[in-house]
Length: 154
Image (cartoon, rainbow, N blue to C red; front, side, top):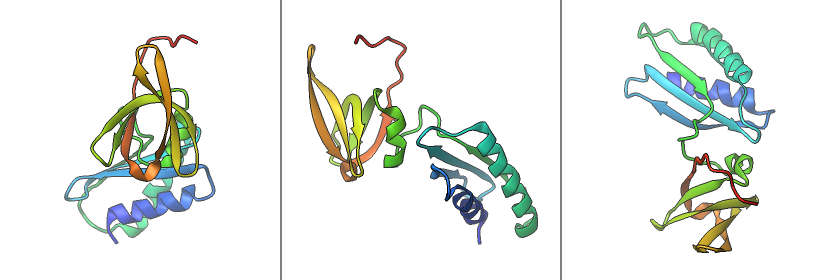
């Protein structure tokens, strides 16, 4: 079993009874530098990342016998990382998203609602008019939260 598989297994086992989940893995070709991204409906605490890291260290000391040193990191995805799992969306209701669709179109709008298999987004169609659109999750490649420091008018 590879280091990536060992760590993924540990993370998934530890998160199975929580609202957190593994959303992404970045690994170099030699599998010596690994980054694991976890997310949850209400975000991810530093304490959770720390607890996972300690558990992984203990298990790797026992199971990983290669002489090659490895470096791994457990964190939540940064604000610049795309949303790739429908479970990530609920914490972003009320925020603007850039949604990249599988048909190569891009949609920008405010996330209004998240259901089991779709999103409801308020999309500007003119300067003063918006239209609500339902987007099936299966039609989305990924979405990115648009970071803005402007206050929204209510």
